Length: 482
Image 1 (cartoon, rainbow, N blue to C red):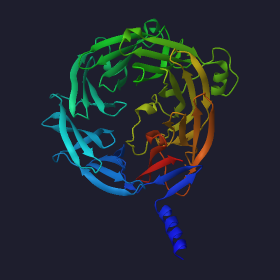
Image 2: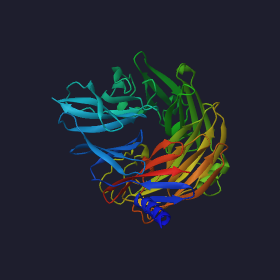
Image 3: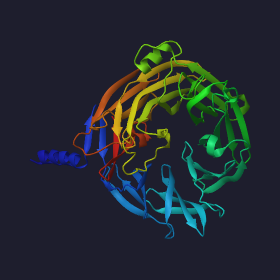
Image 4: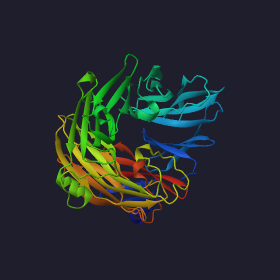
């Protein structure tokens, strides 16, 4: 009868749009996009009612739009006066987005911004920076603000001179541009990280004298660049040696914060965590706090009874999650790469540019997640270890690691449980008091996807977008929590 036929068509519809459901989570798989090994992609985000993705290739760049059912709405070419160009970054707002391009013109490198509406219609286009002629092409580094309305691009004009500018995509205007000498700070040897705030100020963090023989002088130097200020502030590290660290801007508390790993004697091992806070209005009032791992936590990390003063290595700082009181949750991941002569590149430098073949005979191990919660006064509240094991070979580990989904009530760590089969998707749900619960949320067996959580994007409080790359086919998977 008519009612039965109606339900039959509804069932066929949900099969057609390819939905996976388990434990109140729904995963909707998009139409496929052909992908070559030398292509590059970047998810733009959700603009209006569309999910957008940019794919850069040797022939130019393409823009793809998917609807709420992840069906392909349209595909447009990104054009720039018949010039060959590279996409170096994107920024998205609710009703528009911008694509930042780089191209060559008469021997000069040019940075160009194109602004589009939800339908992919070009609404503004501007060449924002022309590099001077030089014997080598500049290698611009793109840095995006937290609100995705500003970006900065910098490069090393020389070992001791930084060349940088900041741009506002909402107003489509240059905020500032300058070349600045860095004194004794080497950009090529000592520059550790760059961060931009929502006002367009760029912070360049240098790690100076982080060696065993120079540890009494060991420090971070923060060079602040904007239209009015060009000043470096030194943060002594109390003769501690840094293994790794991660900086971010806390706009709620108007501070530059960092969390990291340290040891008293060697840069190659870890005995504790540190928390750094620098008020942006009074950077000279910076503070840093060091905390050795409790013995119980060290036992949980190493998997065996430990003694006082034990250390470990093979880890990196994945992220710092900002707390409302000005503190952080420091997120650390155990990582090692075997059969590699050179020191490994930590995953922070990994992009979605997929290299063909990876490193021959290399094994990638992404294991436990270590957490340390530190309040705004610098005191530790709790430590925890979330156990996982991820192993792969010759693939750059692009299916490993995890994605952090942040909400007011909880933090979710979502990851592939088994890299070889890539069928079980698990998560840890971390509550504000430090308690956590692990569960399997999706089973992708039979859906022909390989989900890359490390390159995922949070759309809103209950939705994330995950890219999948398998056999030169790119798809997007929207995971929505019920």
